[in-house]
Amino acid sequence: MSSENDRSDAEEILSEFQKTHDIEPQPEQEPQPEQEPQPEQEPETKREQHEPHNMIFIGTKPIMSYVTATLTQLGSLPVITLVARGKRITQAIDVSQMIMKRMNEVGYEIGDVRISSDSLVSKDGQKRNVSKIEIDIKNPSSN
Picture (cartoon, rainbow, N blue to C red):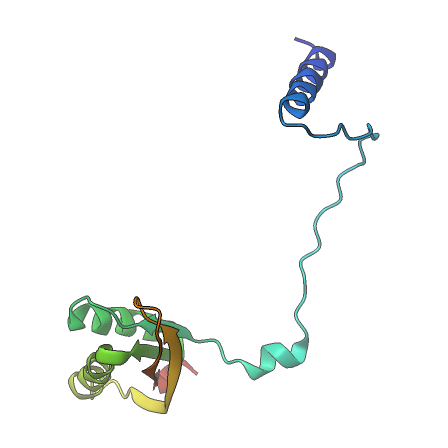
């Protein structure tokens, strides 16, 4: 098959689609040579402000799942943030303490601990405040 037949088939399909979906046909344009997309660059100040770190959201899995995930990430990143809301806050604290006490010889440190509350809409439509904690765990050897 030649490319002219392919193009005419494609044009027929496009025009049929436009007719069935009430879309006005676009005027034909000559094909432009494709330009390579330029990657967007972030301003240097924004990149310097945020230290590369990863967040682990604490949920309903067993505690050891989060301990393992945190230790795996700490192998390659200098800071991991454990994030939990509501009833899961105690589980986030347990994860951080297991890492600190069981991995004592490695030298992991607890960095910043941030507490806040998120305003959420519950199933019954009420606006409720839910407590939130973020615990940074640092790996001093990966700096």
